[in-house]
Length: 596
Image (tube, rainbow, N blue to C red; front, side, top):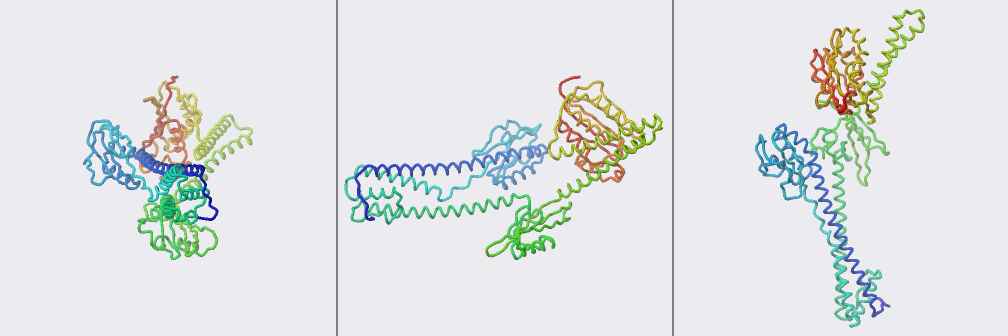
């Protein structure tokens, strides 16, 4: 015991010991509660993730059940359970029959029954799980059950510190009571009390807290407790070090998971030009099994220009990032991959980071945008040229007859409207790309609108010796729609019918009302659309690969804009077409209950 330590007979040190004991116990219990709460939160997060997976999978599984694709359902169940670490993923009929189960050895039905009874309202498992209802029309109800895996077990040292704190608190509290009863029993107890005062003041060195052995049995027990305390402190320090190491390893695992979620391919290449690590996206883009990428020479995976770029990255001292774009035609569809490399500095060895990006769609969009600008320039130039030509004719020839003047003014008027439609199409494209297209709805009388638009095209149809027929009902409900954008849709459908119908053809515009939806049908006897082109005709900038279209101008935007506007109104556009016989476009739009 250090010199100057005084023995005092007072309740103040005992009170201090009691307070310290309560604090330690409170801290220990709070720490234990927090760690148990974290584990409970992890379990809840896993359950919520399983519920989200169930909600996401319910629609595709329901679709496969409707299509009687039971093997597909089982593949999806097994794949999702394996990839997302689910304890169980099961599809159960309302009558209890099991269609698909991710558990090995599970008994499942050999085929989807024609019909079953019952209502799928409960999750028939005992473990924490979630259920997403499935409906197979004409057969019955089912349930998609997803059960998460158990959360990670707590680390070995999770309870050491809080238990230690509570234990020391209990011991100190008992010591305080004992000192209260025996505060004047002997010098050993007085010395222990004084040592506790020192401990409370911040003294932690065991050598400074030990008592002389000749102070009695109590002093010996005190010294044993100090030795045990030192042992516990060393054990706690070791456990803390193990926890820190486990945390670093866990962070490394988390980093690997993040690495695998990247859309771009990432490869780490050592200075011997061998791949030391690669994520799943890289294996997909390089068209190699992932397990065969790690440890493979880079020269066996990438073209020579990429190999040269990575080699040059090792020789660069700065932070520059060279890039190379390679077009790959190994698969059915060619892809454009952009490779970029950057040096990673290390203490002993150097590694390079090779990033692989699929820029195919970006290049396709660039090409389409360039084609659109070129086509738009041509589309704008044609009406402007006609307007300028006929305007100059009227200005320069003051003696032009009335018939010629009316013809010139009519052409100027038509070309002005054509120019306005082109500009409106371009503005609508900009609105769609910016995600800002909005509707300004009002009462719209569809029949007069169709009459007006058809009247604008009659001159053009007459020039091509085409017949425009109207099959319209005497009355229709008043629609709630954006008149300007609906006009754009009808202009595109009727204008396309005239444009792609040869001389002497026929265009029929008919309207009917069914199930509170107005349907406009634009039928032509034109060149038709090949079946292979039908899925793509509503894509922006798309032009069918038909040699007959070479002489027909078009921006590739009209149908894309028309469908976008129809869907903003809650409707849609579909098409039926036979090559060399003609096409029929169907515009379906909802109407309000208001009657004209």
